[in-house]
Length: 104
Image (cartoon, rainbow, N blue to C red; front, side, top):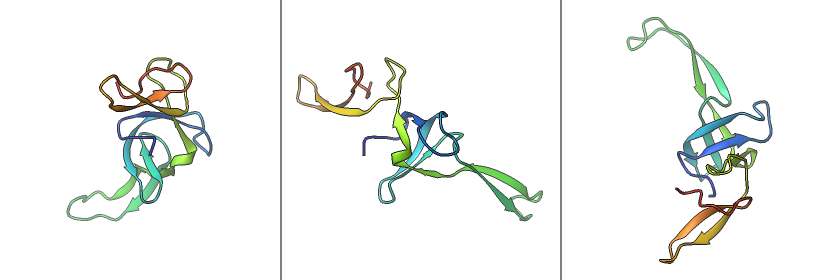
């Protein structure tokens, strides 16, 4: 997976195209990510002991990983992700546009 929890991503297709947000959760088995303030789902909840008021709750829904692209922190543009190596041999993700390290 080229996207990790905490990355900033931009949605490239769908109803929320162009929105940016932070990745809250990554689900590798289903190839989906949950992004902050993207794909908002409304759930109608009946009153319970925990929530005596009930009402409509808004949560983020999962979005397919192919519909988001990571945003490089240094050049602030959406980019593809490459793999680079540090001097000590550690593998890091790099920006394909500017060549900087994304994992900073």
